[in-house]
Image (cartoon, rainbow, N blue to C red; front, side):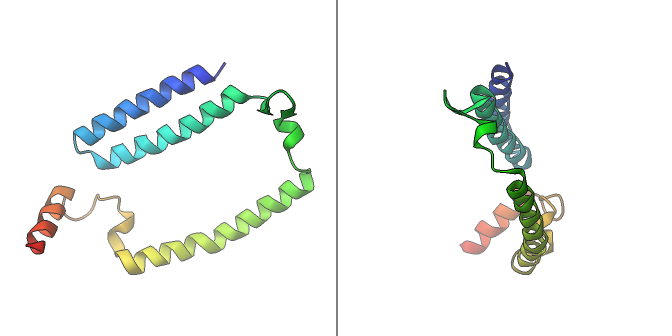
Amino acid sequence: MWAWPLQIGTGVAAVGAIGALWTRRYLLARVLAAAQITLILLGWGAAQYPYLVEPNITIADAAAPAVTLRLLLIALGAGALLLFPSLFFLYRVFKGPDVFSLGLRGKPMEQREEARHASDT
């Protein structure tokens, strides 16, 4: 039921990403590429639902016990609390303060590329 709309959305995101690359809108192309991957995975899951391995194993049959899933969720949350600040610090140290600005601060991308190529020669 949901597989076809998700596949159409995937195609629209792919064409949009190609168009964004063609017009040199790189941030939009990245967002559309991420949307395309997300829609591909959602479409695959929707096409398989309710089976994981047809015809014997459903998603509900393959799930771990509720206690295990709760403990896994707690462990993932604790890991994220440790990992994300560390990655933020790492990027700030080695890539500089503009790494999280998404290219919106400073010189436009084309000027940065030209300056880099000029310094190479």
